[in-house]
Length: 294
Image (cartoon, rainbow, N blue to C red):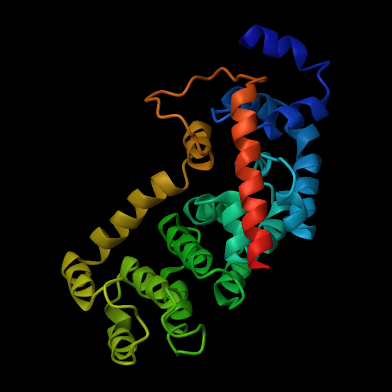
């Protein structure tokens, strides 16, 4: 569809048709559909919010069907900075790690900071609650900590306040032994420059909280030698790619592209039967695996 054709159809195309196209898995980028959704944000937002509610209410039932809209719903609501989506995202990412992995794959951690920072309206109470939620996936909790660190780099949160929060997570009561949760706490404290908390860090190592190899005391020493400003500059550089302003960069983080092409065409094969059959096969295999593990 050309730009002219797209513009000419915006007045007449049903929003349900756009949602259906976003929901159809093609294995290729859907940038033109995303462009159309952005043009029609006022119409599409209620549908995207309802879609999140549907997934949260019955994730297993959702997985039993053939859907691909969820990552685009998260992407668009994030791009719109839709604060009504924030509590829904927190509920979604509090689901079990196995279910989240089937729903979103690596998106559950790589893009979570962008989702949370762009929809939170400057509040981090929900993000902290997700970090504290022992029922949530350990890597999701780690990603929520990363969101707090990136909020500091963005000037949205106070460094001292976030360090105090993270330091309080090293009591040994916040998760089970051998969890990567503790490595997430240690890495996050290291990112924010740990000069005030080294006594707590050393005790966490003595207590065996932090998995060997995840991050070492030598890593902390290197960060201390780097200095506060250079350490925070590294986090600001991470912010630029983890929470990009450019919609195409954010889209690339949200899409799982199966072909190995060096460039992804903007055109979308709406009736690619082969890719749809492959998608169906993946869904069937996933359902069989879930039944086996129930």
